[in-house]
Amino acid sequence: MVVLSKIYTRTGDAGTTALGDGSRVPKTSARVEAYGTVDEANATIGMARLHAEADMAERLAMIQNDMFDLGADLCRPDMAKDTEAEYPPLRMLPAQIDRLEAEIDAMNDALEPLRSFVLPGGSPLAAHLHLCRTVTRRAERLCVALAETDDVNAAAVKYLNRLSDWFFVASRIANDDGRADVLWVPGANR
Image 1 (cartoon, rainbow, N blue to C red):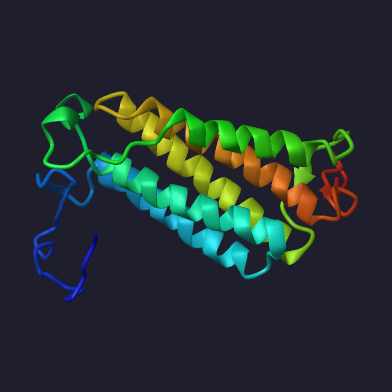
Image 2: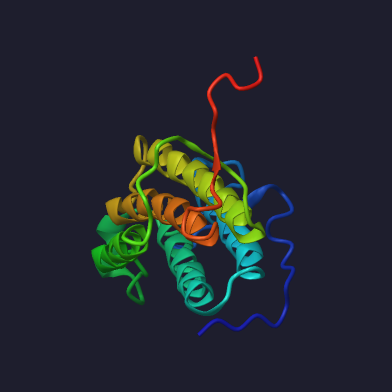
């Protein structure tokens, strides 16, 4: 259980922050950049939820919770030491990826195949979901870069990869099941 009775601690005033294992790193570290961008993506999901209803709102709420799980996963380096931890570290699981894939497949079944690339836009919800997609893609790139030099849970990277696909398909659902998609017209303004 997390208890936050005081929001500021002053421990980061010198430009460092604590990771989940208690170690301190510069706030500019690749790990902090990766989980910070996951947090940013989560904030964009919160904006999208303002425009979502019913099932879509529930799915976005689940994804927001997953994103906190993902941040917790990324802020805990050295997975080899998980068994030594005082409490079991929270790690992303393949089941979370499987859920996204099942939802993508179900949403995609309602859509006609694309005949052109889709421009970000359409309904307010679709536009916000495209923003979620692009920030999630950036978070994924940062996690991949981190994995080149440090320990990263492969399920965390896969989750971000599927999530950006989820946002793309969900944006089409939000655009009247793709009927209101804004399509790219190559060279239209030459």
